Structures are given as structure tokens and as C-alpha cells.
Image (cartoon, rainbow, N blue to C red; front, side):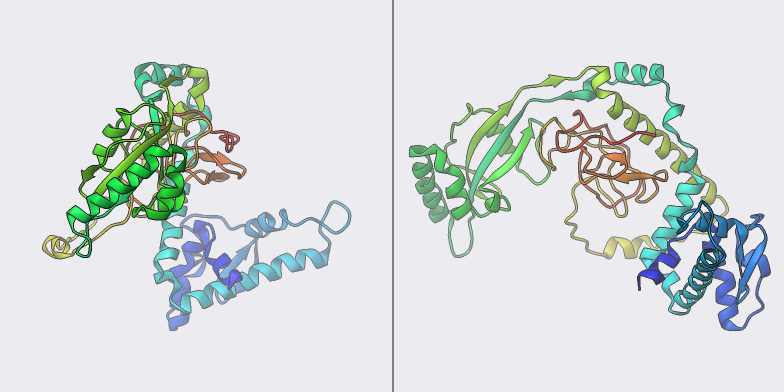
Length: 395
């Protein structure tokens, strides 16, 4: 199964073979070399032919150079045969994948789209394109975006109003719990873990660090109540749309303004993302020209969709974060980030666990983890490299 999927995760030269292989399977005349390579592509000297699919010397040398010889500094005849046999097997598996209709699989189509974007659109964008002067100018013009705002770490206990627990009973329960934690503030986490009825219960009611702008999915009234409290203080019981709340401020972080040198990596990512989005929009506009696109708007409007995704995210897209606030945990990203289609970053780049773009693996800081969606503009993450991992080696 691994080999089968490896066979479809290939460069565009093999993606172009879909039509030709399908023709071979159906008995239709093969398209010759045009079915095995992109138009005008030189495969080099043909070393093997697998049901009309050519294995060229260029592909062979690329694969062979990744194989370390058992002895000496050159592959032996036996080792070269192993490489060629592997490529032949790959072509056979590729043809078999087509027979199974895997080219219709949305995941495979996404690989094809991402490979297309990476090779046709994003391959031209290099870090070296952006001079220090350009980055400094951007930073000076958008300085407010790189300020880490004041944040408070909120703990919350929620008691919901339900059919089985009417409003008065829910409020009475919340008042009882509030009295308990007011007498022993250090017990707030334990009480929340036992009695709270929201998604943060398993974390002892810890909502995380939140700025005055709030957090998706969190009622703004909770944020406003928390910012009105002293550190360690516990709020009175108050009601929001989902029930009765008790809030405690665990710690507070003051606003921090980063220098250009501290934020240079984040500025580069933001400027680079903006350029990638510009290229994406231009490429889409070009391929839409002459295309016939019919959208059944009434049918789309009639579909009911309940999304669990974070606001602002769309299918297929990770967010490239500009760096989380120093020392903060994963969901603590420093802000929204421009989005680039999943898998469409330059070769060697990788998404960190929390959205940062890096090279070489490891956890990267940044705003938001992989999210699904189309290209979307946004501000950069407002924090510096997090302590959980460096921003990775930049190209």
C-alpha cells in the first residue's frame, strides 16, 4: 500500500501520464512520449518502456543519486539494476492505481493541485528576493501589527441551563461553586475540572492567554469580565448565552513591542506569503480565462452546513504563522496569518505543529495549526519565536 501511494506522490511529469495510461488500460492508442511527460519535457535517454510509459535517464539519475553505494563512490551494476527495477515497479503500480480509479480520489487530486502550484507558481519565490531594506520598510509601515498585546490567562467555570436544569437551578449551582472557590482560590482548577461544563473542563477551566480582542468561540463578555479583574481575583457569577460563568485571572502579560531585528523572520514570512497569494490570484485568473464554469447557486444556498472549523479558515489550507508569543503554548499564536495552499510551499519547507513555516522539521512557533481553506489574506503573527521551537532554517 505504501508503494502504491508513493507512486502517486510524484512530480508533474508522471501526473501527465494519467491520460496516456488510462488510454492504454482501455485499449485506446497510446499517446507515445506525450503520455509520459509534460509537453516539451526531455526525459533523457529512454532506459525502459513499461506499457508505453518511458523511464528516462533523467528520472533514473535522480533516483540513483539518492542511493548510497555499498562500496566505493559509484553504484555497482547490480545496484543500478535495483534502481531501475524500482522505477519499473513504480510505473506498474502507478498504472494499477489508475485502474483502481485513484486519480479520482480527492486526496490524490489535491496532491496533483499542490504539485502544480509548487512547480508553476511558488517555485519562483525565494527569501533572497526580499532585501533587508524591503523588510524594514514593511515593518515600519505595519509596526502596530507586530506588537504583542496585553493578555490575561483566563480560567472559567460554566454551568449550563438545560431542560433538566432550569435557569434558577443553574444559577444556584454556579453561586454555590463561586462561594467554594472564593474561599479557596487555589482550588479553582480542581473545581473547574470536576464541575465545569465547557470544552476547557479537562484543562481545569484554563481557556489560555487571551487579548482584549477575544478568542474564537469565547463569548466576549467573558473576556471583558476577565480584563476587569486583578490577577488571582474571582468574578461574581454572570450569565452569557451558554450559561452561568465564574472567571478567574491566573496571570497577566503586559503589552510587548518587538524590534525589527526580533521580528525580522515574521516580517519575511508575511511579505513572502503576500507575494505567494498575489501569484496564486494571478495564476487562477489566467487559467479561468476561457474556462466554462457553471455554478448552481440555488442548490448551494439550499445546502445546510454546520462547520466546526475556526473562523476564517477554509478547506485545504494551513496558516503560515508569523510566530507565537514567546513561551506560550500551541494555540497561543500571535495573530492571523496569510494562507498558502497546503503542500504548496517551496520544496524543503514544512509546517510546524502550530503553523510556522520552517525547514528541517521540529516544532515551529506561529498562529494556528493546520487549517483547511483557500488563499486568504491576513495579518502576520504578532509574536516572536516561541520557546517551544525555533523558526527553523530559512532558505
